[in-house]
Length: 111
Image 1 (spheres, rainbow, N blue to C red):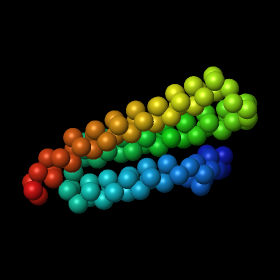
Image 2: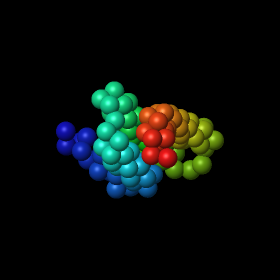
Image 3: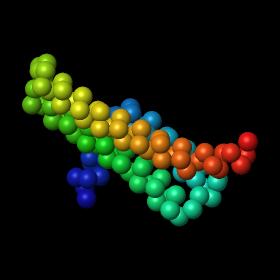
């Protein structure tokens, strides 16, 4: 567990985007409590949050490894990093879509 916690610490302390994801996650959790979402909705929201954070962790891991293996610019390394970043974007768009599908009906009640 110590290596895993060390990795999480490195992720949180070195990656600005993780702070953004964590902030949004806290806002989503607060909204879920406020709107008293169902258990199934909680499961979907937690799953979406976890997928984004895992994608961000894997992206960071790929970037660190690429920087170690090839400190100089290499086209294939750039493509590798771009694909890893794309995975984070895909996860984030998916999570945002899940959030909209869950929260829009609750927001319509208040409008």
